[in-house]
Image (tube, rainbow, N blue to C red; front, side, top):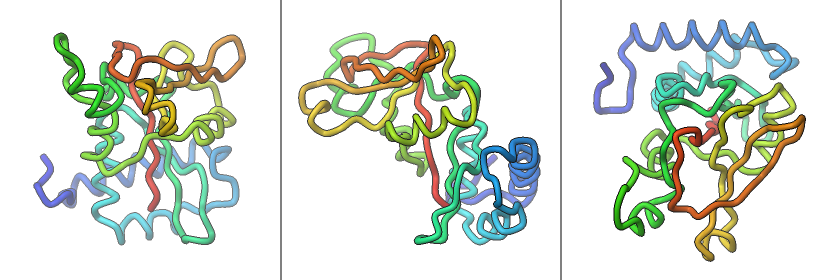
Length: 188
């Protein structure tokens, strides 16, 4: 059980670090040239980020390091689960979309859940980058950050991988499906 300060208990922190290390070592193609010891040191110095990574893990995102930003001295984590995280599906795009539904409202919206978790939806560029590491969303789809011009017209975008190709589609922002969730990123 987590406490309200967005901080993990010592045993939870240990278990999460063990899980992240095992995933890091198993998927070296995602982070060539990076060392786990340096990633772990950053994680241990940022308890709130660990809390967010734990939420990513609990909801089925299987977060892993996919890069390092030298300018900001931050490691970049993406959800790397094969399919859209199970614990983050059946959500419309944002609060405005949720409020616009008169009936059959989903439990929440992708943007609100991401904000509560302290993470950000992947951008289209990040989504395409993720697909360089494997085949993701072959049976599901994931909401991605929607450009303001599209959102202003009531739409939102999502991506998936079919027929050997990454597709970016549009839908009404208020729509939600059991097979659509969202993928996110976190900088530590």
